[in-house]
Length: 260
Image 1 (cartoon, rainbow, N blue to C red):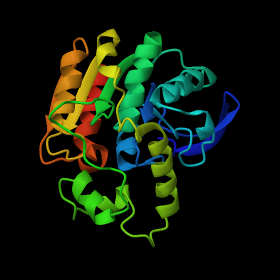
Image 2: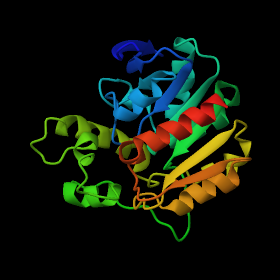
Image 3: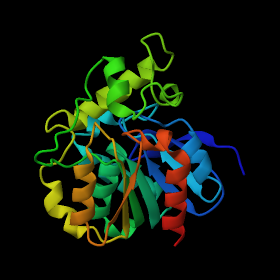
Image 4: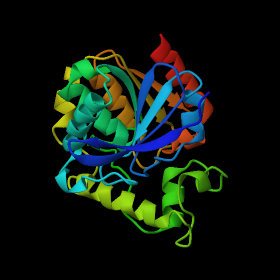
C-alpha cells in the first residue's frame, strides 16, 4: 500500500492541503473541528481498501480561504469545487462532527456528487432537550472529559494537545478559530438544516458514540429519523472522538457500508 502523501492544490484560486493514501476506489474524509488532517490510524485502516482523500477545510492546517467562508454551507460549496478539481464526479463521503455537518450540506446542495454518506457524531442540528456541550473553552482538562469516554486513555494524546506546551497547540488553536467562524452563533448548527434533511438522496449510515457528551445521541437519532432510509449504529463505551476511540469498529462499518 502506498504511503500517504500531502500536497497543495488550488481550489477556486485558494490553496488547499490534501493528504491521500491507499490505492482502491476513492473515499472522501471530511474532518472535525479538531482538524485531524494528519494521517491517523483510522485513515490507515481505510486505506487498506480505499484511496482515502483527506483535505483540510479552509482555515485549517495549511489551507487558505477562510476569509471567503461565512458558514458551513460555504464549506459545502468549497467541496463542490474541490471534487471538480480532483476530477471526482461521484464519491462516497465520511464526515466526522463538523465534517459530517459539511457532508450533509454537500449532499443536499449537490446530490449527484455524493454516492453514499457516513455521518459520525455529526454537528449541525439543534435538538430541543439535548443541548450540545461547550466546545469553545481553553480548559484542556474539561475538553478531555467532554470529548472522550475515557479521558485518561492513551488515544487522547493522539487526538488533541494535552497542554499549552504541546507542539500542536498553535495548529489546534487555528482550527478552533476556523470552527468559531462557522459555529459560534448559531452554536454548531444550522437552524434550517433539519427541514432539508428529507432532500438527502444517497444511502446514509449514521454512527454515534453512546456516551458523546459534546453532541448527545439524540442528535444521531434525529439525523437517522429525518434522512430517508438512514440507519443508526451506536458504539458502546465511546464518546465524541469515535475515529480515535473505536478506529477498528468504525473502519469495519465504513468498509462494509461503502462496499455493499
